[in-house]
Image 1 (cartoon, rainbow, N blue to C red):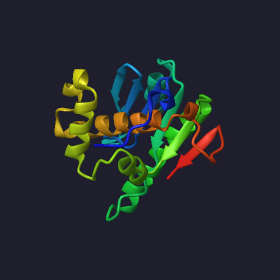
Image 2: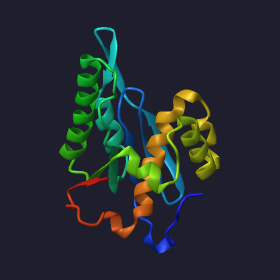
Image 3: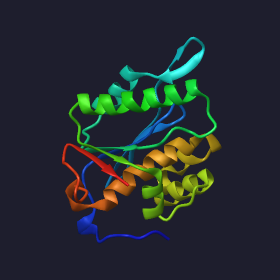
Image 4: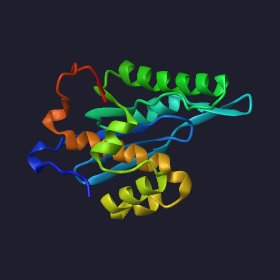
Length: 179
């Protein structure tokens, strides 16, 4: 099982978790559970899927968001230069959209949130944990390709469990990086 904090320490606003990348997702979590799930909005450019900035913005402005948490990932090893560039471009667009909307946000390394929630590297384990945490939304995480949804939901839940009114210690209130 994973560590828990007392209920009074849990962040109570709506938190958006973002698993970046074209196969990622945007998930809104509140005290009552999963509020909204959106696969990463994408658009085809020259036959390849890329992040759709207008679609991301539309998802974010459609919710009363208290905080956004973006997984701060590195480039994938053994990927080509073009793939690494496109992934970095997408990550930068996500951070820019969130900052442009003046939403408070945190960047968290995957090693940090997975360790804190005591979940391994296996994406199937991530989907299973999400289904256990939110049984009413278990179908949302049922398919293998739903790992981005599970990760985004768990990232949001990681932040909620950090408590302290959404303030990670030692991190600036407008932009935080954890891990």
